[in-house]
Length: 142
Image 1 (spheres, rainbow, N blue to C red):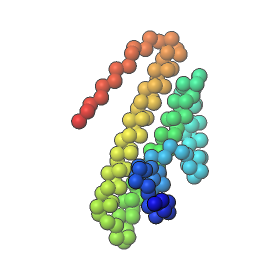
Image 2 (spheres, one colour; image 1 turned 180 degrees about the vertical axis):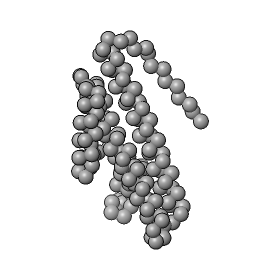
Image 3 (cartoon, rainbow, N blue to C red; image 1 turned 30 degrees about the vertical axis):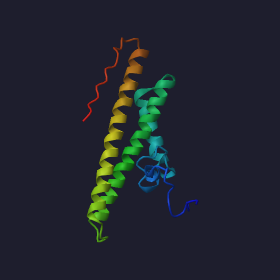
């Protein structure tokens, strides 16, 4: 028997696949309403870092996109708190879950920003002829 795509998800489909539609935090696509913010961030980063070559240009574009995604997460967080403190009758468990999700995505975006800044800095040092030591990555598993 086939499933109804309008009322149920197929069993093999990952439920996280609908997250971009719920809150937009996992979506890496820049929305139309965010395009101006992306363009401003990209232009400012280009002026500041003056990228040369494909790697530097890609890193600067990624930084601009991550900046917009971080702004999106903060906007969702602000809206969630505004809704919670209004007379909307928000379920406290659902609110706590949403705030936890937002926090997780903000931290992930922050880590991606740090990695991309590091990549850009290393690429620019190499371009300028500086010796760049091998990168050491330490991961803590809890």
